[in-house]
Image 1 (cartoon, rainbow, N blue to C red):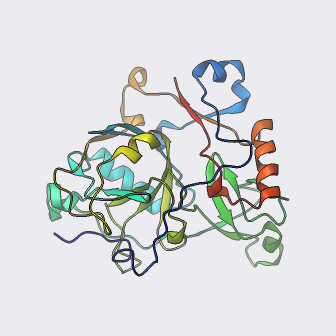
Image 2 (cartoon, one colour; image 1 turned 180 degrees about the vertical axis):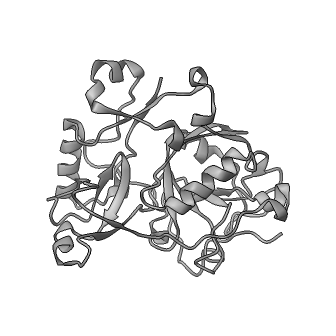
Image 3 (cartoon, rainbow, N blue to C red; image 1 turned 90 degrees about the vertical axis):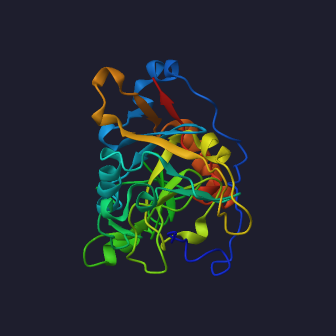
Length: 293
């Protein structure tokens, strides 16, 4: 079996296990739906068309896609989910302190079920006025922040005034919980296989197509059975993605309702100020909280 590799292993990239360090105000507190009801303006409802439910042998993982950054990759991921081709696939390559890779549709369901490979969408062009960030540091010069709870790294906003299209280059960094597309050494070979960052993978930034993030279940990702060092495979009796479902395909009464805290609220504004003072990057901060109703 040929696995989609992360640039054929770790030696080429100089893998570093990089757990996200917290800022001085610690990790985000736990929230419940009562907090959403108490301050609905502080929360954003997740579009069920972008909400994917992973039922794994270790538990449930809820993932939100961000089509704005990699539309082709988000669409193809949805297509595999909606055709049930991820069901029964294994987490065949799992590396401690790094990531869990799965989605080998060809191995589970046959090569004839595969869709065409996709060009890499490692970065995207962002118009600051249309896609504003809650930034670490002054908005005009910041190189990191959040959009709808997604971590974003970017060229400084002032460069948009100097560019021909009024945009800047931006990308989702491989912070804990980020969903990205596996590939071979060919940058345009991404297809069904994906990986979920468990702790940190910023050395992959701008080389792999990140397209979403785990909203709920990062603890489940961290529990997925590890492979042998250093490359994380083969794994005897690996954990399995039992089913993957798009929330929009469920009857409305059966859909999970998920809410993401806005990073414009005062607690996050304070956290971002502290992060700027400490020289933190966006992956050093804890993931933005989400609540399931």
